[in-house]
Every structure is written in structure tokens, then in C-alpha cells.
Amino acid sequence: MKKLSDKNSEKLQQRVLKNAIRVLGNQSSLIDFSSNDYLGFAKSETIFHRIHQFLIDNNIKQNGATGSRLISGNHILYSKVEGFLSNFHESESATIFNSGYDANIGFFSSVPQRGDVILYDEFIHASIRDGIQLSNAKSFKFSHNDLENLEERILHFINNENSDIYVVTESVFSMDGDSPDLVKASEICKKHNAFLIIDEAHAIGVFGKNGCGLIQQLNIQNQVFARIITFGKALGCHGAAILGSQDLQNYLINFARSFIYTTGLSPHSLATIQMTYNEMINESSSFDQNHILNSNIDYFLKEIKRLNLNFIASHSTIHCCVISGNKKVKLIAEKIQKNGFGVKAILSPTVPENKERLRFCLHSYNSKQEISEVLELLSNFVK
Ligand SMILES: Cc1ncc(COP(=O)(O)O)c(C=O)c1O
Image (cartoon, rainbow, N blue to C red; front, side):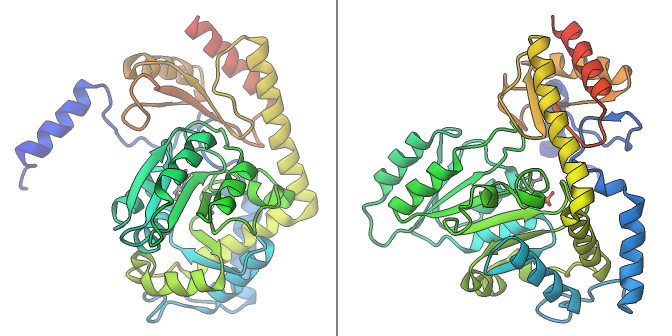
């Protein structure tokens, strides 16, 4: 087989030298403090059986979508699930993409136009960055969660009449777990007529009534131009949707290349999205899972205070303890893993150098005892 080019080999070697080489591992049997399966839906047998039953009851015996949604792949479940999502999330339209990555690439590569300006939080997710890279618009970052800096940037670019301004941030940051002041962000955007886009990947299922997300919890859904919601986190399955106006949906269907030039999701995937939502909005079970999840978040916060541990401030499922240096953070992660806890080190270049961290994801199925034990281990290893 032909070998990698010298340039590619050199890049891999650099990763090794920087202690940043990525390798695939098997799914571990360690106590889960790293997955995005916040409510335990990904492994729910009840949901698994309901999906099967739903497909049987609706006489859907088709394995694949058969093509792009614009050619042959737009099977009946798409309109049902999109109708449900727009209703539940109080939006004019919901447009399903194959993943959150595809949704962000599709949106940012197609909506902002040449001459427009995209202002993005410096810690924005890679999928948004990649979408911005594909856009003809100019882009500039603002300091993390710093809305004064955002407004200064808007004022700097606002003079040009032909230039629309797009502002993008996350309601829960994937690598920090923190949130911007979203009400203030929406007021600033309204005041300056900027288009606000919020990625809600890590807020769905965690915040808001029945897990509807932080934007609806704050009742600012009508101030936001577009929301990106994803189903691979708390919903425990796969896919994503862009919520916005009917015009936005028409636009995306016509111009978002990651929507157009790809095979649609299978009926099974759509049924899975619907069944996981049904579980989330089922008053008794969603109350249980969401309630336990939130009490675990409170407990985790109390424990880090008790142990005097230094974490990035967060009220979400994601909590990070910064331990500078890939080598050091990897070593501590390995020690904790040896004690049975699946905690992951997040290395540079995924996060900036010196901001390497141990990232704890909390779930409804973590026990209080597990939380105390893993934090006590961390406390022993960092002191
Ligand atoms: C904030 C954010 N947006 C988008 C994505 C991409 O979503 P998906 O995993 O569905 O491609 C992720 C996942 O890592 C994320 O954390």
C-alpha cells in the first residue's frame, strides 16, 4: 500500500512529540464521566424497543433513505418529526441535518454573504469555525462571553449599509460548560439589527421545561435568528436541526450544500429522534431523569467547593479543571482511569496551549458516591 507523504508523516510526528497524538480506543467499561449521554437515553432498552415497535406499527420497513432529501430521500417521517420539532421548540420551521457538524457547516457556508461580517465567540465549536471558513463573509472573533467586546465589534462594522452582521455563540460551551448572558446578547443584536445564531447542542435535554433548551427557558426564541439543536448529546441518538423562520428553511434547502449533497437519514434514525423526544417530554420520566441530572450538577458543585478544587464556573453538565500541559493532564487522567473512572483529558490543540483540562460530563445515572470518589481522587492527584 502506498505510504503517507513526507509532509503528512511529519505532521503526525509533531503530534507525537507534543504529546497530542489522537488514537481510537474501545468504548470503555469505566464509570462514565465523559460521554454526552446526559440522560442515559443512548443505552435505554425501553427506547430501543419503542423505536422498533413504532416502525412496525407504522408499517415502515425501509432501511435507508435512498438518496438526498431533494431527490428520493425525503420519506414521510421527515415532515412528521420536523413538524413536531418546530412545535415543541416554538419555531416557524425545523430543518433536519445529518449531524450538528453538517448543520453548522451548511448554515455558515451558505447564509452569510460576501461583504457580510460574522462575529464569533473565540471558543466556538470546530463545526462553526469550519462553516465560517467555507463562507465568503469576513469573520472576526470576540473575547469569550464578553458582550461588551461583542458590542464594540458590532459598532466597528456597522457603518457599511450593504453589510449584514451575524453573531454566533453557544448557549452552553462544549469545552468550558459555561454560558454567555444570552438575554443581553439578544438585546445587543436587536439594538444593532444583527442576526443572532445560538448553538444549543449541550443545552437541549438539560435546561428548560421538558429539556427544551436555554433559549426557550429564557423566552428569547423570537429574538434569535437561528438555533442549532443536536440529537447526539442528551437525546442520545444522532442528527441535528436548524430552527428558524420558514424563509430560512426555504433558503437552507436551496443553498446549504451539506443538506443537499448527502444521503438523508434513515427512517430508523428519524424514528429514534421522535422516540427520544417522546421520552424527554414524558412528564414522569423526564422529570425523573432531568431532576436527578440537575441534582447531580448541584452535588458536583458542592463537592468541588468542599474539596477546594479549582474548576471553570459552570452550571451545566460540563465541568472542567484546567491542568496545564498535555503531558501532565494526560497523566492525571490515566491515574483516575486506573481507579475505574472514565474522565477524559482535553489536550491542545483542541483547547489553547496551557488551557489543557480534565473534562467531567455529568449524567442522570452517576451516583453521588461516584461523584465524591472521583473528585477526591482528583484532589489527591492535583495537590
Ligand atoms: C457545540 C457543538 N455544536 C455542534 C456539535 C456537532 O454536533 P454533532 O455531534 O451532531 O455533529 C457539537 C459536538 O461535538 C458541539 O459540541
